[in-house]
Length: 293
Image (cartoon, rainbow, N blue to C red):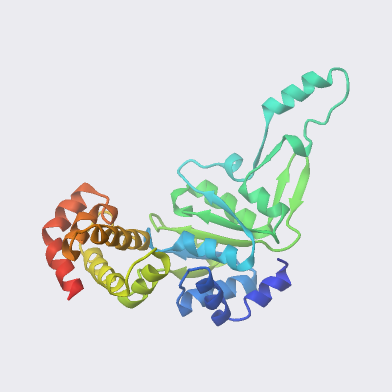
């Protein structure tokens, strides 16, 4: 999809929200507006929020909205340029030299170049969306490298020269805010904070994402999860866990477990930390009963 096609798809925030809903992602007006502006202004989109609120899913939905491949760069402590930009396949180069014998061979040909996510997007910016996932897990040195990349959208390969993007790539960054990002990186982006949805919207998401969950069950799960997240948990459940809990409880109910018992027995798909389970289980019966009321 060309830049003009992307602008046509993202004709307005309302159009973006409608297209995302068709991809089974419910975006509120503020998120749809942030996505719309990032596409139309040609700026990276920085999504921050707690783990499990749907940041990565939003990037997947944007790629689907634009009809492009999502190229994901998962950040971690110690990530370096070789994992993000490119590297040479030395084993293939050595084999090629041996097979060539006395004949000349270009060991810096494309077939020996291993393109990592940033280079993959530069080569086909109109066909791909770059997701830099959990940028806050990387170090400041890698953040500086990424900032340089976002400034020029080009990579210099000493053996090959400079590779530039033919058009402005669409880039989405996510952060769980485990550390503060550099101000220079924030200023370059369109920013949006994704919080947990309210009860009504989370029930909508559960209905949209679940397999065979009744509306009443979705509402009860949304209410219960809201109460559970209000507790001081080490790992509060995300939206995906809420969907799984609704599905698991529905399966157990159809197998003969009554509703309060089905929710209790399925708690392992919602809470996945031993200390959190110990804190929630004594209150779970009351929480579920209130949610079902």
